[in-house]
Image (cartoon, one colour):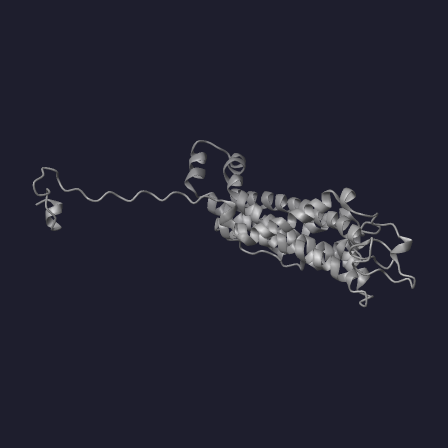
Length: 313
């Protein structure tokens, strides 16, 4: 007896010589296309926020209405008080020295964007090198690198950066180096875990069977698979970088005067709370830029289904 008959189905349709055939399988679903609409509204809003600050930072000399460091005589009232927001020709008011707040915020965005990009990229590069080498080679190299990474992870990030700046002195270069040294450990752990998973995959085993060495496997087969994870971590960690630099600037260890910095501006306005715009305006800019990076990072994470072990915020 045929299989169709055992299942209660006729071998052939009545009046037909065609044998019974099982229904055709449903066509395979098309892969989901990754479009901006799939990200949702929040990441697009975050991208718009970042774009505004990026344009302000890049074109600050052209867009700023005044010199950010010049102390204008008409920037103070007759009693020597700073002008409030809306006082022409100073749209966002002036500070206690008669300097234009809008121009200082634009030039302060240059420091914030620089800190969000440069030390962040350097920290991720260091994390990629350490994590990929530890995961791909294994053995004593893996043990040594990961134990050192875990030791650095338990140290308080802000206090470590503050200690380094206390020893080395304030300055933009020292700030960048300190942020790199305190920010590479968590992404290194993520890269290490993903490398352990990827080195057991079929395409890596095939490359190894064809004679590819470990350095070639890392560069050609493992690193390209880590691109989206590094991109997500870059956007999420950028918010941390901006907040860390602002905190250091608030304590006087960040970018030094006369270069405008949002953290230093908040510090200058905290003693004169009866002129609240001196502290609120740079604080709002700081919150907006950090929120923009966070919205983009979480949107990419949801759209790609990536899961990170831990994001330091």
